[in-house]
Image 1 (cartoon, rainbow, N blue to C red):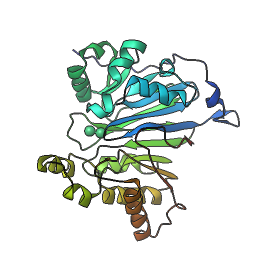
Image 2: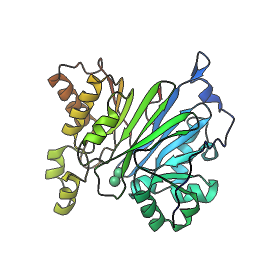
Image 3: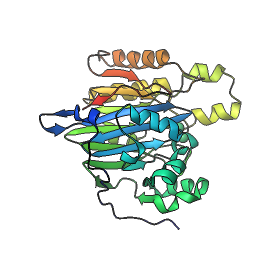
Image 4: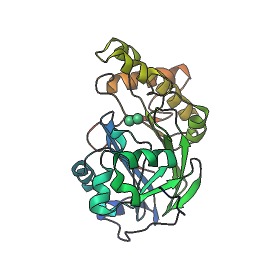
Length: 291
Ligand SMILES: [Zn+2]
Ligand SMILES: [Zn+2]
């Protein structure tokens, strides 16, 4: 039986690794955000503030997590916890190894906890459940979650606030729900899904039932909808928008960018000026956002 927990600060690591020291400005730490992997085949993002380093999802192998963290001068033992969006393999594939070798705490909604426990029962002692929407302090970060429309029980996205900056992480979205939009507006950096080009998906090799699933309200966000969301976020003051979770078969970075640029122009926004747009690479660390 999974148990709810009180959220106390978990500061396991007082030392700030070398490269992170460069992220200090005026004696204050900034929030630093970087995807380590982002695609339909594996997702993992590191968020740091001061001595607190957390992962959003761990859907890649431990070896790849180690390689990605090394880029920052970090190791898995520096990670305070993993916040998990939902229980699909591309988001939880690496959690069992993290727990086994590093005893990394996992933070999930109650629904996702059931899913993670079902796949990796050995992670049960390390699963900490939160009520979706509850806000809590975690080290130097304030974290909150919001429900996402996806075919996974308890699926959520996250917002993190630190040092006056806000990150929203919203992937695996069948559509942009009111909850997703409200949580995302005003984020300084928005990591949002741009999963597929609709025509490419429709005309591609996937079986019909998978196409239906991806296109459904509990599937994945296509480039056009992602562009509309990006434009709304840019209009709300977002400085950086990173398109993520691209499908290798049904999308390209160029198609995703093109859709967002179109949406910007339709809204009277200037691509690259009203917000900086980037596409998260699928298998390697992406741009480092130092907020
Ligand atoms: Zn996914
Ligand atoms: Zn998913």
